[in-house]
Image (cartoon, rainbow, N blue to C red; front, side, top):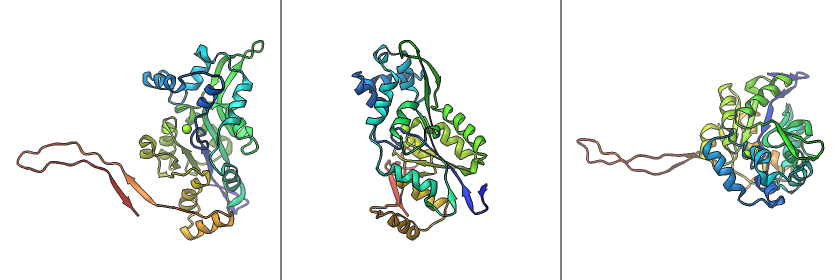
Length: 284
Ligand SMILES: [Mg+2]
């Protein structure tokens, strides 16, 4: 546990970017700017053959697909400006930095997306040195992407997180990771195994099975709910009051735990009973 001035407790909050802090995939935005068709098909094809770490498909395409050869640094920055962020990302970053008495949450973004795209999208919200994305080398003469230096996808996210924990002297049980997709599985398993906290922000079964909490909302502030409950230990009344202090009323806060259940049909000797299949939902 890291204490500041004996009164402030620190937790590292690390977040994915695409579809965690944004609505749409930045690779798709870039392909629209560059007029590259069938981006999603290209990504699906790469994912199917497991050529690269999950989430690193765009990095591979930018380096090796001729259709992306025209991409320059300025196109990446432009794509970042066109990415649609989820609501209240700025307020979320502010609240983590200073809005919770007794707690400080250093906030970092770890994305498989190009660093230029993510830094551009979060300009004025998250400092550039708090954003880790795929780093490219650009040819000095032509401006073309000439090399891929680092890809924080899959196990690459674990490497970045471990470096951050060491730099901030943060114990692993004081790490919170939030993400939406398959690129986050490795890092979520890593954080869980060291008693940290994991929050999924999508209905994706692969991530939902691993994350300790799942929050579905188009507002980034929603992720504060499990943080306030599990770490700050506030009850629902305190949480509603805190949101109200920012002029926000929590509407439709449904606490539903979804149990994903599938039964395979089978017949047991001596029994006429057959097993059924279905989905179960349990509210609490
Ligand atoms: Mg994502």
